[in-house]
Image (cartoon, rainbow, N blue to C red; front, side):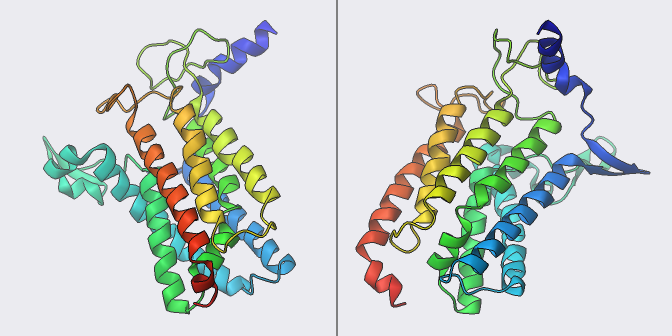
Length: 285
């Protein structure tokens, strides 16, 4: 048992986030996990279209839709990080908001991208979905019902990518479940909060939504169910996650992530009530 605990606690120190390196080009597991997440969501959604008559979409339609989602995640996730987590810095360094370069002591430097926000990515996906459904003249809420139950399983791979990347570590702990993250300050054990999130916000939320996907709810209800479920799990897991160093706790010992999750849960409840009240109008639209 001692050998296993030692292996577990030191696991992050033995992980290489780089999958393939060719010259100066690096392909990281983090990027691969994003790809796996979208592929997983695509095939689960495709399976639903073949087994559930209320989703009359073919593979070409789903592929086009996911293209919009990829753009929504990238643009929304990046904008969300800039606005929610580091706005003063990007006011001073606007070039770095969307370009992997910045001005250093020696002029222009390649700095890469650092920082994506889940909450911004969610907003980006919603906006992209709205634009896509307007263009294709299909129901936004029907597509939301199709994809909301499959998203959490794909999300699991995203958090696994964070773990392999050695980022978003948790708070210090004395528990044996803690791990040593090389990039974290000090060598103390920390909660592997990325794995907690992948399990609860990913696997558990997927199992909940997948098990109720065929129950008759107001059209579009799967979307607020997902938003509330994610916000609920994330709020509590944030107590184990290290707050962003440059932000710390915002108010009442709550992190920015927790405040955004409270807003998510409130918005989800209001959205569900609106869907239930306007179901006839939505069904006829």
